[in-house]
Length: 68
Image (cartoon, rainbow, N blue to C red; front, side, top):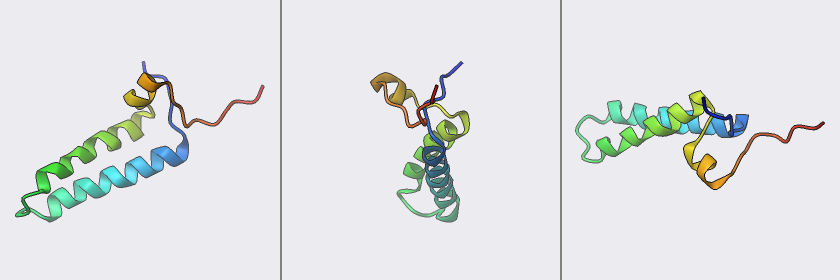
């Protein structure tokens, strides 16, 4: 369905940032900014599927170049 356009380092970083933002959402229930932490869902999902829609739009890829 989606073309894989993310390398392993990119996926790991996105997963860590997304998970940290979601943890912050649940750890600070009274903070006024906590709803902005839900933006962490986006990097978390893109890291799991291995494809970033913005990378596709701009034609970028962090995947290693395949040697033939």
